Length: 219
Image (cartoon, rainbow, N blue to C red; front, side, top):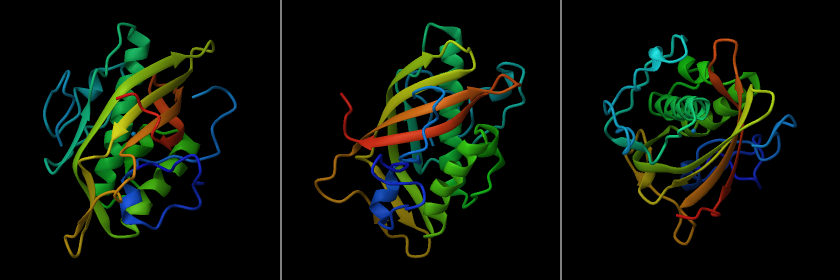
């Protein structure tokens, strides 16, 4: 379910359904302006299907994102005592939720994903979503997202976010046959992500680039 590992370019998406379990990212187009996506959070959980009051934050009219109960995307300790860092976490969470909702809905052109991405981020996300939809597969199971670390750059409009996922209970499901597949035996189920985000004129922290590497997670 990884979004592309550091050794895989965005143009060479894996053809193996099990490897589609990783959430998206390009191996090489990280921005030079700074370092570095069911049920809801286990720490501050609202509805199982909707975003947590998305339109109430920062004055922007955020989309309401719904996930089915068949796919539980959980966010552990997804909070910060710093208000701006918390804003980064909340928007990054919604971008990831929007991406998986688009995969499940077979919608590579999702407007919700576009809302939470810059132009370059949107290109990455669309390639990731199509790596599922072009193969006629969806996602089921549970995907914990944990250990977030936010760094705000001095320009005040760029942020770096690192986090981990655990694919042990996350699977792809073929839409026609119903066949469910997980990662190959022996593959590390944990994936580390580094995301660069830019703050839009509306105050929305948008994904600009994503890099991932299987393993390298403490949990």
